[in-house]
Amino acid sequence: MRWAWAAVAAVIVLAGGIFVFRTVTAAGGGGVVVQTVQPTRAPVVTTTTAPAPGSSDADPDPDRPTEVVNVVAVDEAGNPAAGYQVTDGGEVENCRPSPAAAGAGVFACSPTAESADVCWPTPSPRVLLCGDSPWKTSLRRTTTADRIDRTPSGAEAEPWGLELADGAKCRRRNGGSWPGRADGLAGAYHCDREDVFVLSGGGPVVNRTNPAWTVKIGGLSADNGDFPPPADVRVVKAYFAASP
Image (cartoon, rainbow, N blue to C red; front, side, top):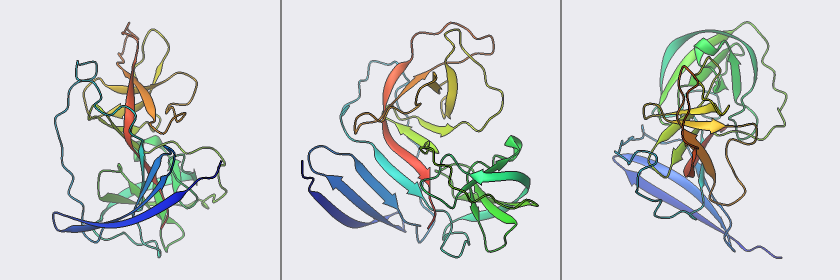
């Protein structure tokens, strides 16, 4: 089968900030990939109120392909991209390729308390800039006494953040002790709604079988309580960290 590819470049002006998107679509129902280039000004983040998981409001477009957004928080020299603010962080160690990175050049470090699972190298070989989430333009300046391991991981990247069809925004888990549930499913992403989690059960957390990716969401509790079976929800956008 021959695939016909069409490339579209667009510039969108939003609230005084200019964003450049490169969109690639595959004929025949393939997925859509959107790469976000650094904004010339800080992006405006809006919050909407969406129906709670399990409500009667069905996904209006269940077959719409998931958009993949690559977040680039530094320029080619390793300095903060326009619009990003930097504060001082702590010391980190054991830096290795980040599991949330689309390609090489983004790292994850220990300890978990530093939330350094998505970090970009800087012109200084012992300094990294670590992001809090794909929706924030804040970076923390961390230092390490270790040599950074630049060996590619070879594993399939896991999204740094997910936007779901029910409106939830969910950030990838970075270690720590989490509550559980009686059926043995574990929390993989924590969402911006109380007691809502993206769950994992041994297989891939994000089902990428179809162009419209899906995840399973449900509750967790400190006493590993009984919960209804998890609900399948479409991923509207999947955010990865990327190098410039």
